[in-house]
Image (tube, rainbow, N blue to C red; front, side):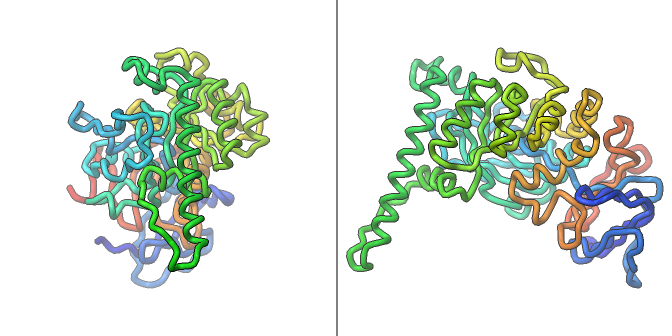
Length: 402
């Protein structure tokens, strides 16, 4: 591992949770940020990185993507995001299908995206467990930030199409909702059995057979992880809220194409929306109201948002471009940067480590040639855990292992 005690000096430091500092310093020791500001003492022997004329930001976070489970340029051989053999597959883990060698991880870094929440696909009513991880490492195990970071579910057209074509349940929206509710009832009963045995004197307890599917759903019911609800249309979003309130779990709306139509309700309930992808065609009915103006509409109503490419639907290195185009259509620039950093970090439960430039957090940093919301800016240098993993030099992208 390269020396991870460095000082980034002279740049415009954008901490996200504090005011920008022109000519600021970020001091890093042993892979973590130890100081940030305009007057930071730099110990002798620390390696200096001159960021004069550049912007220094925390690494961006893709809040909802499929990097590693839908591999670039691999076709069916690298398509491991949907286990479509049954409608409820809460027991499957994105962790077990991620290939760190997927080209998408390097694309991410070139776009300043240094962490991603990887979700299973949306073909099933209950699709499996998500994982938050960094975009650099030889094995997925050394990349993991939080596992599981949520449980993926889908409403709307996808499960209806997948199982409707097979003439089996669920083939309708009402069937999809019934499958999800039934899964939660089974999980609640499982938890009740476990609790009932635990309350008995030790000698009278009977073992309850483990069930990986119900264990995962139980984590949601215990509010240990959020329910990551794929839904586009306003009626599906309303269904997501209805079921969440019935079972009392933490809800995150993924995609939220028509969330602006219910923005006041969503804001009042404190439900975050991970909106996107925003640079796609209206390829199906539920995308009819897709618009780059929707992020701004949600924020003005008081909704907390993150922005997603849904990689590989939109290439992950275009994450900042989606934010920039949303600013063009009414989203304020400061919130746009929060939607790429601290907001997704909080949604994924990794904000103790990532999402802002603060003492104590991981030194996952990107040095940009200028404002990242300027389409002409590029990442000049990227550090993960204080180690340089990428640089753009002499007109070419170079990674640390090249």
